[in-house]
Length: 308
Length: 247
Image (cartoon, rainbow over all chains, first blue to last red; front, side, top):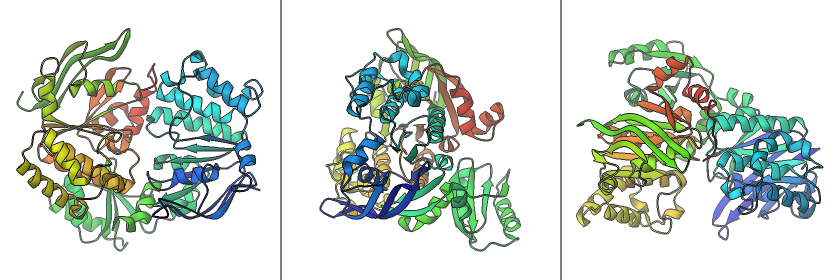
């Protein structure tokens, strides 16, 4: 059975004037870690709120853990954990009080499900008498995850858990998610960081309320049409301008320390010709090599129409 | 000091027994794009607040645009621009009202506001949106507008605090085009980010760990120094040694 299903879910705001989610359709298998990847305003949070039964969709249908998101909202609320993008615990309760509160609401105790949260909770346990509002960002995030897990949910919803979090803490957080997945919990997680997409079993790329692609991250990268090249020179800013005005260039975007370039037509003479051209206009330390396109390349490619 | 935009010498800030910024020493050259990265809680925000004239250091020395952070904080504020993802524009003012408001605060005359405002809208290609409320602008436009407003008074230095968080990949890159343009026109850019690919776009990058600056060099030298192929790995090596965590 699928843990989550969405069938043509549509959500609008402002009396229909703002289309936040546009006929979203996808399924998440039991035990899968599924990523919703897209920028702010893409509709990720609206999808989370519809699935966690906090908002009613305008159209379409969906299920979570086999329950209907409209008719069986009470059943759904009992068997899911939800960590919203905005810190939503009680700031003036202590770490321990927050956890106890959530356990009690779900008619369980911290002891009963301690095994599930142990790995995460021991990291914040030294501060268990501290008020949640006084915790650092990383510790708030861990407490929120504990509270979302304390009733041993079947499906876990994590809305941008790593936004604004530094690279080291992000790696740690994904390690925790991997362990939860191994315990059989289905996870729907959203992120604006494309590099985190590879850590999910499958990903949906989303922009302007529309799902653009659903596949494993590996397959998503393979879907990139044509060959991709990384180009590097000593003067990168000049290189960008020169590559953009090069007649054979189809697209060129900066990626870290190189430019990712595609040609209008793939042929074997491209690299030699480009090398010559760039050499002639004064570029030094030139390096052009063919590479495998990444998730972000593909995202840019398929979201291009949105940028005129 | 003609071509030094920011100079910090053993700059330190303590809150009770907690040393948020621990004797940091660095220079930023005029027109440079200077990346300021570090884990949450490393002390970036505190250091940035001092450099913006918003917080008084405990000890050490620093000048920003030639002004002393202890004695000339007000002059610093007039000579810098500031933008962050969290706070930038007033959503319930229109695009032009925001421009007028900020330019007015920075002391531009009515004529300058009109001229530079029109130029700004033209360059961003949003002249037709002058009367639109900022709340209904797409996020990407808002970020670009917000940056342009932060440099409308042609400051010597602009501070950007995680300016591109949550923005789509194409807009994020367009935003960096604006940063390069500003730097080309001589504005010094001091920028914090969690996207390590963006650290690669900076002329030099400093990495803060537990209040200290543990590394400072060009991205390519840092990668050589740590024998890795990306800034992400440089950052990871440094930041995982951190003893403290949090914001």
